[in-house]
Image 1 (spheres, rainbow, N blue to C red):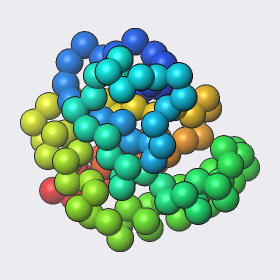
Image 2 (image 1 turned 90 degrees about the vertical axis):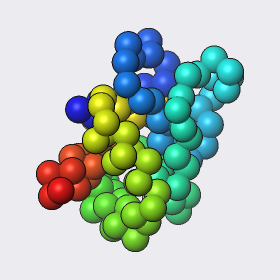
Image 3 (image 1 turned 45 degrees about the vertical axis):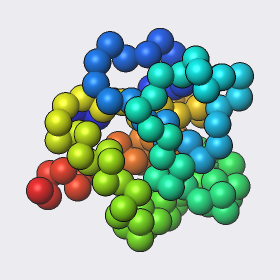
Length: 117
């Protein structure tokens, strides 16, 4: 099971927790955020993030481009896949939009990889 959650929401009760933003979230101190890893390389590139600009009308194209970036960096996903094979995983993100963000794409991409074996 892979869950997504905003960094500003209460922490999950169990499982591994990974921050999947390229930049550290505003207003959160590192010592206050319990994470098992900060996976910057699993986040969208700075160029893609700027292009997307959290504009919902660009989300489908963003998701396609982001998946291509993820396919080009399989090592960046290894910690997430290994943790997901052991138990629950939570992906933390800081975007305000809970439906149109990189964690949604990443979760779905990880599920597809796990389903393939």
